[in-house]
Amino acid sequence: MKFHFTASSHEQAQARFDHMTARYGQHALGDCDVIIVLGGDGQMLNALRQNLAYGHDIFGMNCGRVGFLMNDYDEDNLHERIENATKARMRPLSMSATDIHGKKHEALAFNEVSLLRQTHAAAHLDIAVNGQVEMEELICDGVILATPQGSTAYNLSAHGPILPIRSNMLALTPISAFRPRRWRGALLPDNCKVTFTVRSPDYRSQSISADNIEYRDIVQATVKQSRKHDVRVLHDPHNSMSHRIIKEQFSA
Image (tube, rainbow, N blue to C red; front, side, top):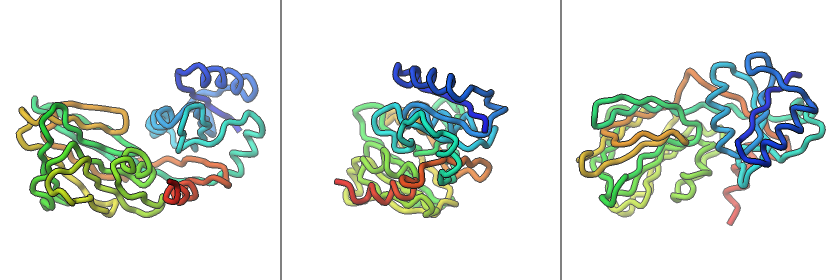
């Protein structure tokens, strides 16, 4: 079994990278069986995007703080852990946005796509699902469209629902909704196309983020789940992605 190791720039992750590559070797990305990610969730998201062209299994080991997508760090028995790991298939969201200058931006997001106000002015936006306007005007700080694996991240912090990993759903969650004041969001099938249209974009400017990729001064954005891309993330059997998401629903 051939490994390709990738690590975040943090000192601890770099030190562990040196230990692991010395012990298990380092193969080129195009010539490996499994990608081993050393770092936190941010490094994992970067590795997921980089791996789309290769389709390798990915096994992460936490060298950060939370590391929800990661396994515990342990230098021993790596081959055995990989062989016994459970697999969670993840498909990213495909985002296409246009800014006030008419420039188009595209990006993929494995956790969420979020629109956020850039200034003191509240965001005003319309939301359409499959071409039908369902929310004529949402006044808020922003809005999130999250995948099941992303539902436990920023979406949960905004009081959005936690989605089981195989639920085939997306969570649409407002951030500090002012009008409609009691709107808590929506659960959508993952084959929906969601379009956000910004009102008064010159004054009520909004940015859009696909995980950690950001574009500013957005006029309109369309988001849907990509059917062209998917990756397989490996986890130790005692702490699978399904188990983590269930456990998260019972945590304080």
